[in-house]
Image 1 (cartoon, rainbow, N blue to C red):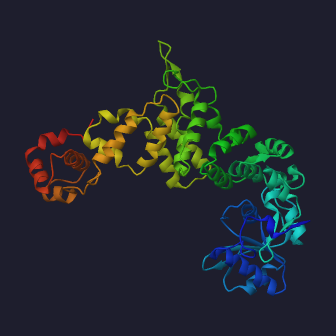
Image 2: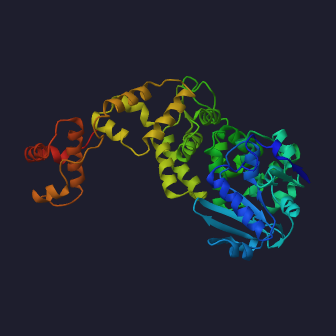
Image 3: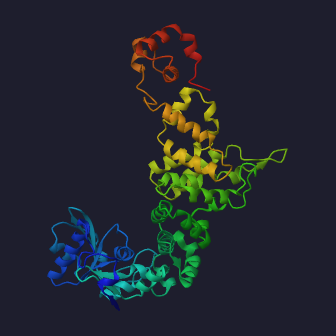
Amino acid sequence: MQALPSETLPPGPRRTILGRPMKSTARRLVETLRAAGHEALLAGGCVRDLLLGREPKDYDIATSATPQQVAGLFPRTVGVGAQFGVMMVIEPDGEYEVATFRTDGEYKDGRRPEGVTFASAAEDAKRRDFTINGLFLDPVTDEVIDHVGGRADLTARRIRAIGDPRKRFEEDRLRVLRGVRFAAALDFEIEPVTWDAIRDFAPRIHDVSPERIREELSRILTHPSRLRGFDLLDASGLLHEILPEVEATKGCEQPPEFHPEGDVFVHTRIMLGMLRSDASLPLALGVLFHDIGKPPTFQRDPTGRIRFNGHEYVSAELTRGIMTRLKFPNAVIDATEALVRNHMAFKDVQRMRVAKLKRFLARETIDDELELHRVDCASSHGMLDNLDFLIAKREEFANEPLIPPPLITGHDLIKLGWKPGPRFKIVLDAVETRQLEGSLQTREQALAWLATNPPEIQEDTPES
């Protein structure tokens, strides 16, 4: 065991490393447990982040107290995994996981142990996944308690499994994906023996539930280091297992006059690296999936030119299938599919009528669509004229709603004696088109136009 003094921690006043209110709450919980005669320490990721000078997202506490004893010490607790010794303590500034020191029983499903045995801090550290996550911190004395060599690996910027990596991954197959995420997010290297085990266990990721895979994948793709995460997924074989549709884009040629950067896979990889750091999950997924329909639509015309006719629609269909398979929420699926399906529409924006252009710019996903279009062009032919055009039009239209309140509704048509039916939408869209283009500006004008143009209405469509 190594106990490192407070002077080795990031700069800050002694005994105030937790500093801000949420941090002081975690310290108070530790002190409460100790006052009752229990051992208690900060544990896991929060210790790792504090030692790296980062603000932890959560503060977890490990203790010798049993779940029942924890429940008896704090007014609001929830047993989120009481059978595994885990309680959630509810405080005004957040929720704090308090877990009893334990060793795990046999893992039969590659996900969770059959049972646990309450144990010492040293034994608890050794059942965790990676050394950098097996550290403890005493927030009262600012001492780091290291039973697994995690401090040395932090210094070396290294991801290393605790003990035998194959045993760790046999226990929980998701750990191979977590190892990739930690390496990408922290910009650490994966130690060779651990890396070999990750590659060997990649085909067994299917033992893990789709929901857990989805959560790890989402965290990789929404982190600013997403490109390194993607590369590690590819090199480890996890991309092949989780997203074979993306791997299938390797070697799929593209027209060199539009894609001098290379094949579809290379193009997609460059786009991921060009995304803004705070890219949303639908945007990151949209980039990843926008061209997965190219391999199945690849063809050469009689002149030898490469074509991918309708690939955006095939890509959108494949996107929905992948995301349904990984059990993404419907709202995320719908937003991502819209980005993929619409990404080719940008080539026509400078020829759109005003009404259609306003509807285009009014889409809920337009901000992400603009960013996808930017990196799509910047990573290939470099032509951004359509993007510049749309940005200028947004500024031009900024003084009024893109889609203003309708001049008339279906109730107005009924009052005029019209019978409800499919024709209503055609008529209302025709009125809205003229409203967006400025030829109809008031309800009275719209009603007068309806009264004098019934033949045109019957045949009219909003725009070509």
